Image 1 (spheres, rainbow, N blue to C red):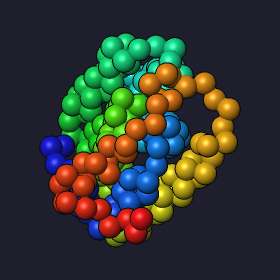
Image 2 (cartoon, one colour):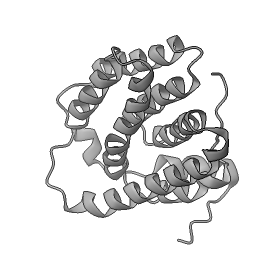
Image 3 (cartoon, rainbow, N blue to C red):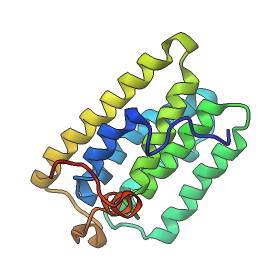
Length: 189
């Protein structure tokens, strides 16, 4: 699978992107940690004995808490991308593995969160039958938006261990990227 079925500009992605642009890094990490298992399961359906994504999910949780550093996590993220490459002929599994890798990478930079969305939707698109694709995509977009809205509300109240670098609030890099690309982002704020 060389081609994503969705991009940052896809109409169905815009409500999710707008919400992503309003979040702090920690809320996006929590959201990615929550959503990644959904896509890992899609990969596991095609490759039930491959544990690379399961391992990455555990490593990602540890990384978000500061228990391991990026060079260690990066090895497992690259393993997930290798799993995707090796899944040639299984486009849903390929996209799902890349979605999980991007979810994990969102700990490093929040712009990877949209990668989880784009590859996750691509995995859903490939796994749905032709007649059910539109409703499957609509359902997944709604689920993603609802989960992000949940974590946006929960994160400020959470008593959770975080990696030190995630405690520093900086500008939302997805918003900065969009501002640079388009000049402005119409978030209504």
